Length: 183
Ligand code: FNR
Image (cartoon, rainbow, N blue to C red; front, top):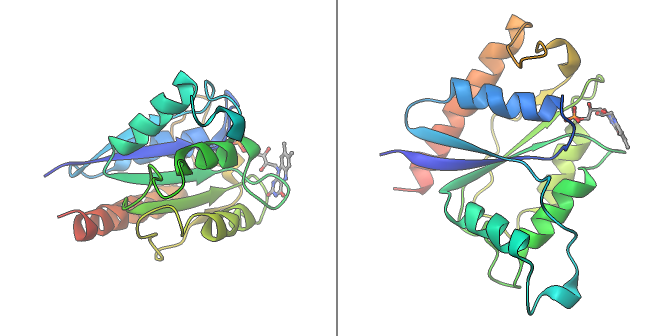
């Protein structure tokens, strides 16, 4: 069986390293996973006043998540946390209360950054935010991709070969995690 994975990219930047990480996963994923890269350019701000009559872009995002068997969040690090756009998407996906679109979906968290920390603080921020609204979050392996600016060329091809086995091990482990939880 094949499982679909929504890979949610937490940066809107055209040359985003988070986007390149997501695209690399799509290339490296085993045949049991079908990765769908989800960008957040069209998502408006969450506003609780609009919940009774949600905007079409919120509904589209929620449907995209609901249609997936699993979710991976690829987060940049902004000021020791995740990005505003990704937190906004998580808030939109988490509602209505008790009906999170992420519920029951095996979940992966991947941090990255050009700096030495590799987005560890952003990833830990998501480990604080997500447990109440997703399915089981994969604990191991954890990957924090530091010096990510050296990893890809402008077309997203891997140029730092040492990152390839790290990404491969992660996506293979995630496939096993999804198979374990989505029989
Ligand atoms: C950053 N950056 C950053 N990096 C880091 O390792 N720790 C941090 O706390 C921050 N804080 C931060 C705040 C803001 C507002 C910006 C714009 C940037 C650098 C950041 O990791 C870098 O710009 C990445 O390239 C952003 O991810 P994308 O867009 O490449 O996916």
